[in-house]
Length: 629
Image (cartoon, rainbow, N blue to C red; front, side):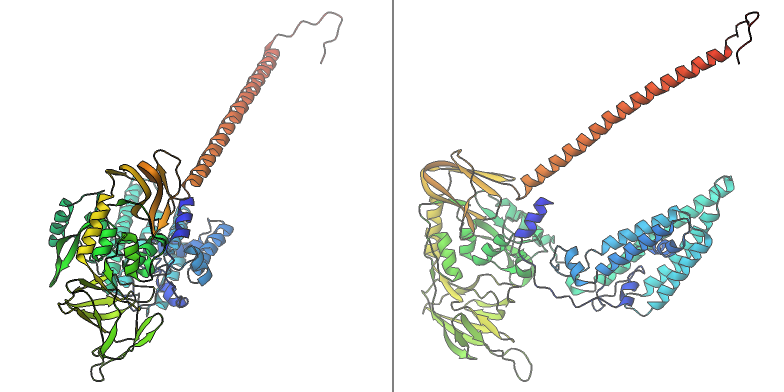
């Protein structure tokens, strides 16, 4: 709990989600009937059905007189309260840690399904009578009739309600009337139980099949193909080039399903999690990587400088015209750890300047843009505003806006407009941006090679009003990048080893300055130099940096999740408390048993003496004296 709380506090904030209000009561009640989903256009509601046997028992529970009235009222009130909490915004926030989740706001619905299962078991365990079961069946029939027109009630629902419900009711009534004393009755009971089990299993399978088939008609749920033949072949080629920890391999920015790059040997930045640290998302975004879901799904860097900074030596890129084929692309990569004699204090405001600051070399030209054709953009202090233009006949985007810039011939032109949505055309063809302010960010991408005349023309086309940064274009010198990477390799460690939660580097003799690691600076890291005290590293450009002093030869860093020491302390204290209580209870129980044993022995001795007195012969009365009573 402590680790989770700390991770939640440090996570990238969720997108601002809106709650349109609760679904209608009939839509909510229809979710009690099994086998329905409603599809993409159905009103969103908590999915809570547990099958016809469970529904029938839940409906009969209020009438089961063997259960105390207070218990029936309490369980029914609990179920109603939990159901109401699913559709009230304050309690929805409470269920999800005070932040509406991505997608459905009803992710806690399984809790109500569990409560229904408990209620059904309580009803079954108290052996409901025939009349009580009949009352529950009537209640289910009324429910089905009232919800007959809802989108989630289809053919499968009626098959399960009429067929499965009838068999379940008859089986429960037969079990009630069976008596296990007679051999014949025992056989009937066994047969009825087997029929009930088969009904539950078949009904569950049919409901799952129906819901899955309905869900698969929704485009968003159609899975991406990850393990196709060409992808597997490319993955093997990529794995053959794995050189960790000297460099990283990256199977691609976003060509696979979420987190599947991890299954393909991925060591890049493509990752999705609601607990993704905000510092990680901001660091990768600041260095030119894209993201989805407002930074909760980061993407790998796609440009040469970003790959060099993060140590990506091999990556997969899709082959043009072949959607399921990928080609291996080697690239110049700096070591994951480099020694910097001096870190610059400040950097420019463009992504190109931020990359140069971390790289430690000037490799870009950042030209000024001049509008030359198309719709006239509106210049501003923070960039260019492109007007929305649509063709009057087709409604599609018009010719867009063309800018020109001057760069060194032969350099590589790249564009960066994180929130632009539309087509970008440059020297090597066209690419698409899918940006949406804060939610979806485009990465730095290559436009092509600068022509021999040094003039770069780039056209931005979109149907909607768009915004571009002041300097969306950068021209990279491959020669300067290669020289910068070679210089960083010369400052790399003699040996670098990694473990599950740490790394150790043997540095060149006499290293001084700072060690920069191509790892996002998140809380939990601690580093020591030459066996000295462990201290939290600093951040440079969002990456880990450790001051070395002078003459350092060894660096060791380890990671522990924040909140782990506190959680372990609380857990140990709780375990000791449980052990102490158990030990005290054992001692007291032993003393109590000893006292009881002594009492039992004394009691037996007393009874034995009384028995001896009663069985002993009475003494003869002394002549002349009266016998005592």
